[in-house]
Amino acid sequence: MEATQQDQYIEVGIGKERYALRIYDIHEIIKMQDITEIPNSKPYVKGVINLRGKIVPIISLRNRFGLAEESYTKSTRIVVVNHSDEMVGIVVDRVNQVTTFSDIQPPPERIGSVRGSYFTGIGRTETGLVSVLKLDQVLHE
Image (cartoon, helix red, strand yellow):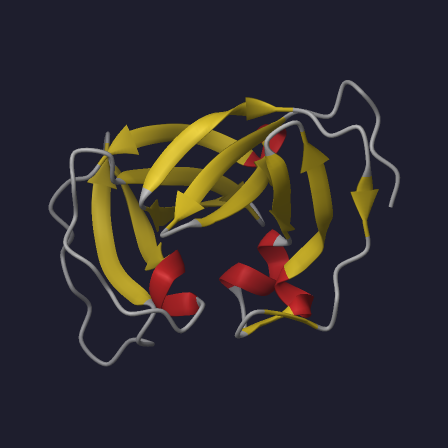
């Protein structure tokens, strides 16, 4: 996959790991707020929030990747993305920065304990490697 200089990404963090989302997939980034739980939902679905009159489902990226949940901090954010004509919130430990990649390599089959199908590739920055998330796979299964 080739990246052009104008492709911008938002870099987010879960624990020590760094992930990136394409900036044009992102609706907005909001501070953590109360989430209304939904009974009998998938384990990674935290519930829903009311975002200015719209009901937005919230998923936990930690739980989605099989990591233990941790207490929310001042840095915890909900990244609201536009996906298939609806908004979905993704809980992340922190939002780091806007970045571009000079080079994006195809992902390996597995990245740690996470399947490679969740990623479109691995981007390189001056500060290291960042896994570029494939929203279709992360949000649906």
